[in-house]
Length: 215
Image 1: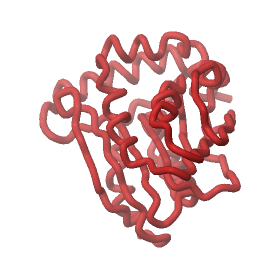
Image 2 (image 1 turned 45 degrees about the vertical axis):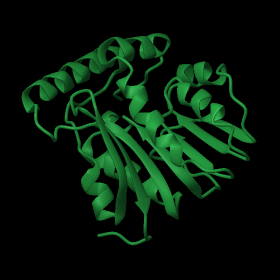
Image 3 (image 1 turned 135 degrees about the vertical axis):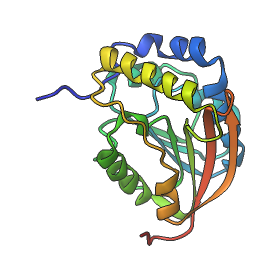
């Protein structure tokens, strides 16, 4: 059986590598979305990585914030638990996000570069599972690379190098980049905010869920 993608090996160096390649643009794209988080929000962080965003959310000093942090890598969870944060409730779950089913229906879902890990069939399965766990009117903070907005040749080269690196270090078994915006459209989400970074290679988007039906 082929080994699943797992970031345990590079978890201690993940943030440093990201910063070296993309400066602080990966973080800026995610931080800009957090201004829409309100008091009394329940938040699902899907594929939370090293958990640095927990400290940023905590620094907002919002009231009654509940966090569900789901991550496949045990080492990433270990690093995340060591962060400094203060929430009303936080749970760390080591799980494949495709199969995670919690008891809460969330106000906010955060996916940062999550779908890059999956082939298209699994990406759609993960998306469908997450959609079922977001309230009507809930917000989905989605950050990822994009091949739109020009510069196709160098963006494609960057993505090829990224997939090669993660194939070697983390057992990633594919190299097909998937744009997830069509899935949000099919599921009747409304784009309410979008900002581009790193010469329009990184997209930080906020989608609002409008219904339970999709095509």
